Image 1 (cartoon, rainbow, N blue to C red):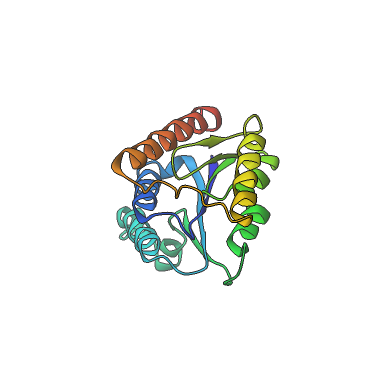
Image 2: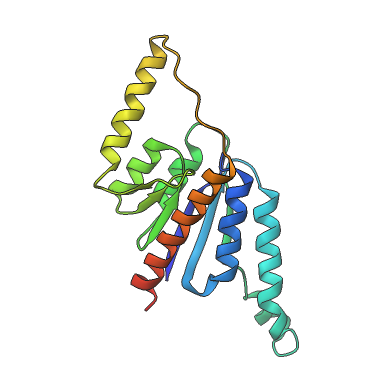
Length: 183
């Protein structure tokens, strides 16, 4: 089994739907899937509750209520205090191997990669120890340009192609971890 850690503060709802669908479909391979955010996300909460109900359904007539309550979804919604980097810090402090993370935050990606996790960004990019320093350097360069008053191109919006690239990258990482940690 492996864990998935998600910086859900600014992850688009379409991306969360892709992740939630994968978790529900393949939950037997996942220890826990942690969504960290500074607010409760209704789609994550609803998916967790629905998944829990579906897991309990076959046992409703076989287990007593106390035993039935022990059956829970592995989708976990963690609401952190509002503040800069609070979700990032929670994910860094509570993530463990084997596992991978999903975030578009480059400094958090760097911290998680240094901890040994593979990180998927919201556009389908995969960060490892081999490529994170280059990405962090590029991000820091662009930040310094903006601080000096130079305008940069805004990030592309999420179109269907970008969402498909994310879904494809998620599938690739998921199947790699499934093969490596669940065989």
